Length: 105
Image 1 (cartoon, one colour):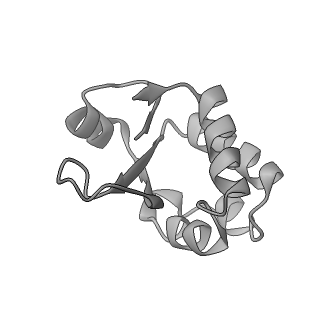
Image 2 (cartoon, helix red, strand yellow):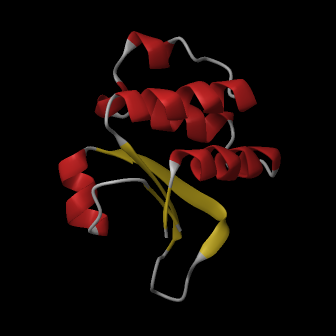
């Protein structure tokens, strides 16, 4: 479902508290070429403040966040190991048919 940035912060913090969005996932997400900015590289330790700064950063840079559970639509869905990604406007429109917000699935 498409969500706004306020809900994205809430949901990411919830995943963080449940150790779904953890330091390993954060380090992997930071490797995205779309996040190749000093501001992101300086966000070393994942915590709730980092999540706030990250969402504000992607909003400022007109990026979109997505969370998908594995095997979407295959019957192998797992909420235990979601995938986190960042999209440009163009990619987000092609993938999710929306030009605003973020995907939470």
